Length: 279
Image (cartoon, rainbow, N blue to C red; front, side):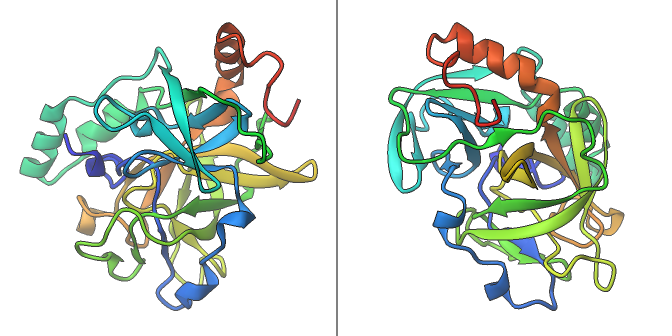
């Protein structure tokens, strides 16, 4: 099934995305320079991840490089060869039949139920360490709900009033928006795209191509990674479309997977001394 079906209700693609913004705020206010978050990793084609240790990038499993896509990720403008990709054992690839059913019925309910039970997280081990970028710390607490978080992406964009720009590319200009985390469960955290005047001054959500993109809160003197863009539920009147006010974005809850992350890095032989910046 096409990757764009992953995070956009049918589950937007996988990581990169230009972020969907408020219709009444200038786009320039959302745009940022890459130097403001150098730990962002670009997957081949589209999608993102985050450098969490010199040799390790964390991303959504469905956003990780696949066979035939090329084994290189880009961090701070430099390409790094991929040594291996480790998918969480609880990750399940979405059957193509679910996408076909959603397109035929106009409802993504079965897709949502499937995604909610999948561990959509992966680690990418790089062949060489990244020496000139500070890794991002993993959030290790349990108080994500209620916090205002930043989200970063460079794929498809649009506004909450009109949705994603029709035919727009899935990799564009880097943008940063904010949203309030409204809830969570063992696997996922979520936030809603509120229209003005309820929305934050720079309210926004991830768009097509944003899968694996970071959800960040500030703490301990820097950014902490709390989530990774994974999938959305849309408003009924735009059931198979992304980017409209009212949609809810589900993000992999990083704190749930800290033990798995550290175990994989240690077993890889290059991570026990390279744990994330929060250690």
